[in-house]
Amino acid sequence: MRLNAITETIRSRRFWVWQLGGIVIYGLPAAIRLGTGSDYLPVLGLFEVPWIGHFIPGNIVEKILVNAFFPGAAGAVAGEIFYSKTHGEVFSRRQKYLARLGGALLWTAAWSLFQFWGNLQNIAGPWGGNIFEYPMVYPINFVLASFSIFTPTIVGFLKTKIVNGYHRLKSIH
Image (cartoon, rainbow, N blue to C red; front, side, top):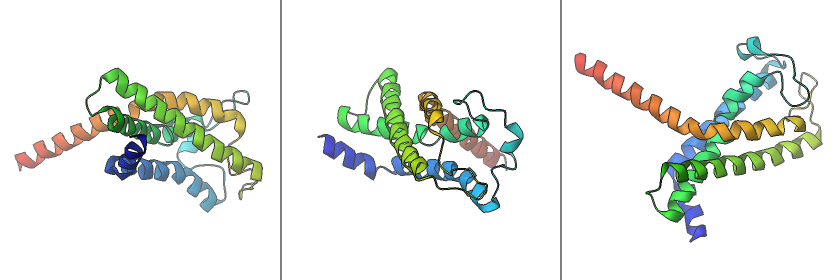
């Protein structure tokens, strides 16, 4: 039953939209950094703050925006789909958000392991620093993942408002 649920989750279009969309959003700042050879991001760099201890990075605004989608929300959607495939489509709001939380934390744990492995490789970027995350910021990733369970709901709400607005505008003309 669980293997079947995993297979159905992987076959879900929604699963892939969130995985690939999240990876693109996560990879954009990294691609900009590698492309420009600078650790500074043109727009988000304006919001950089000094590091707070070893745990809160200077690019916290970027981290919040990016982690809201990957690995957090991507994992949340995977957890929700997996739960619905194992327990049936109809479930309570509490079960939905708990399933999302489990998925978000699992995805974040897997991504943190990958980041840790990469950090141990000590691959320097063009700006001189390691291209992988500093391990002391991993705890903030789990905090952000816990909040990212609401990202799919917010995105769905915004999508509905935009689509309804488009249809209203279209009916006027």
